[in-house]
Image (cartoon, rainbow, N blue to C red; front, top):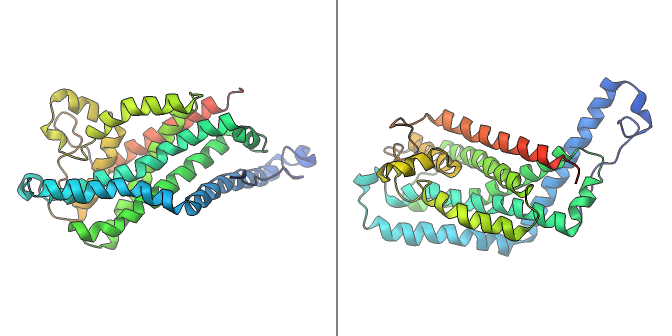
Length: 295
């Protein structure tokens, strides 16, 4: 895929002939160029998504199989009274997490492969700051993963959830927050590595335990104490809990008390959302700091 067309300097930016003019007046065009660079990178990711419908469909197959085969099979064994809702309804936030998780990981892999292929070097020649390029990668990954997760929202009626506009909006907002955090974490890891094989190996070692300890498949309250400690620092657990509590706001029962707990205290929904945003912001700032260093 060809590189996106990034903005070139003009006479009103610090890179052009007018750099010695009014600094305040030059700042606005400069910000406009930075915003255009972010837009170009997001547009690139959306074009990639639109040009690979088969690949996108295959990425959705596994979550759907989990939802209907695993969820349907265990639903007959686990009574609704145990979770407050049917098991498929309980599993749905975990399936949404699986759906948005894969595209966010691909952002990190793509950054490493772009560095190896020389594509990243071409991007770095653009008259915009390095953190802006990283922000564009993060924004594109967040939007793509959210779009793929939104496709699964069309299935809510098949698992007993209502097609409630407010419920769908809450789930969409939860996926945006979660996608942003996971994308930022993937970028923070990717900027420290030079080989995609190492990236994949580290994710293979870390991701499976984090998924199992996210509360997506079974209540965290049934796990031993050490698992509660791991869940308390597991961003996937907060993402699953956030989505599940969005459902609980609109569906009676909703299994809202089965997620992350701090010494038997369940943090409020807004606090969990704030922690996810803070985690993603810190990870992105750290990645931008590392990315800004000369190679």
